[in-house]
Length: 634
Image (cartoon, rainbow, N blue to C red):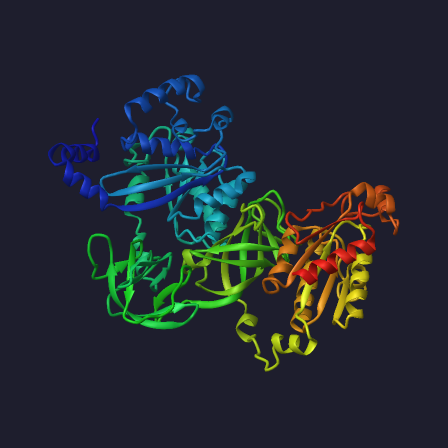
C-alpha cells in the first residue's frame, strides 16, 4: 500500500525536482533521542521509522534482509534494529553500545535521531546523545513496565532540560493491545515523573516491530485517540520556544576581510535581532546598535534562533571570540563562580581543585571544581556524600573560573548554560555540565587596587620575585638543595623564603592527607601562597613532591611569564629508596603507609623543566651551584 507521504513526495520529485529540493531545504529540523531500558525496542523503533519513511536505499534493504536472516532476532523476518546497531559488538550482543545517529525526513520535517544505549555503564554516551536533542522518546516494554533504567534515563532527560517528551509504551502486541495494561504503566510512570519535574509528556501505546501507532494510527488500539508517534514528531513546536527567549549570539569569529569591514559571526542561540536594535557585548558590558545583518546571499531584515549570521555595529567596540552579544535590555549574567551539575565521562576520577579547561560556547577558560556537595544515585534519586566523581557519576559541585563569563542558567539556555570539561594535558573531554546559578560570593568580592604594586616592591627589594619550584620523589634531595640555594642567595642580600612540604603540613595544610584529592589541594594552596610571595618581591623556593603535572602547571600559571622556574630533582626510585632517610619507603613497602608516591601513588615527571638535576651525578652542593648559575644567566 502506498502512503500519502510517498505519493506527494514522488509526484513533486517527478514534476519539479528543483521545487522539491527547495522545499526540502526549508523544512524545519527536529533532533530527538530514544532511550529506555535494554531491549525495550529503541533500535527497532528507529529502524521502523527509517523503513516506513522510505529512507533506505535498495542495497541497504537487501543487506538488511541478509543480515536479518544471519544475525536477526525475528526468525528470518526483517529485524529493523539492525539498521541502527551498526557495531559488530552490538549485533553480537543484541544491545546498543555507542550513540548511533540517523537522518530521515517526511513531507513536513527533517529529523536527526540519536539511538542511545540503555546500560548504566554507557551513561556518558546517553548524555552525549541527549545534549543536542529537542525531544526525547522514552520507551517502556509493556510486559515489564517502569524499570530502573527507565527511571535513570527519565532523570537524565529532565536534567538535560529536554521539554518535549514522549512515553512510548512499546510491545503492546505482546500484551494483546490491552488498554488496562497501558493505563497501569502510565499511572506508575506519571507518579515517578512528577518527582523529577517531568509534568508534561505524551503517552503513546505502540508496537515498533509491527508498525502499530508508529507512522499511522493503529486499528488494533482503537481505544487510543491520540496521534501516532511520527505525527507527534512532525508537530512538536521546537523553534518557537527558542525565538521567544531573549536574544543571545556567542561570537565564534571576528570577521575582518578588509579595513572597511568588521563583523561578528556566530549562530543565533535564541531570540530575534534586527538592524537598529541596541546590543550589549558581554562580559565587557560595552553597548552599540546593529547596523547590518550580513549573510552570504544578502542582508537580512532580522535573524532568528538557528541562523548563522554576521552582525556589523554602528560603533567600534572591542568584541572577541567567545564573547556574547545580547539585547541591551535583556543581557545574560556575568560571573566566575557557579553551582553546577557535572556528569563525569573519564576513567580517571574528577579531582577537586585540579584545573581543567572549561568550554562554554566559543569561550574556553580554566576551571577548578570544588569537592562535590553530593552525587546523585540516578537509579533511586538519592543524594549521596562524595569527595570525587567516578566514571558515569553525576554530582552537584561549585566551579571557580579563571575569568568571568557571560552565561544563562542551563534551564533557560542550553548554549550559554551547558559546558564541557577538558583535561589540560591530554585534551580529553572528561566531563559535561550544566550551570545552575552564580554564587553570591562571586558578585560580592571585588579586586581591591593598591598603590604599592609588584614593581614598587621589586624596586625596594633590589630584585624581582621568583618561584623556584623543586619537584621530585621523596628522598631525592629537594629540601637539602633548596636550603643550600637559599643560603647562597641570602648571603648576597637577596630576600628569600623556603616553602617546604613537611613544614607546611604542620600548619597551613595540616588538615590534608595524602589521597590524590588532598595532594591536589595541597599544591593549590601552596601555589596561591607562592604567588603572594612573588607579589611581595620574594624569591620563594618551593620544595614539594608535587607528583601531578596538572598542579605544577597550575602553580606556573599563578604567576607571570618568566617568574616560575621548575627544577626537576631527578633521582631514580631505586636510589631514593636506597637512601630512605625518613624510613618512609620501608613503611610503604610493608603496607603501613598508604598512597606513597612511587610505590602505590604515581609520580608524573616533568616533560620540559627549566632545570634538571641528576643527583646520581651531582652532590647537593654542586646542584645548588648549578641552579644558582642558571638563575644568574636567566
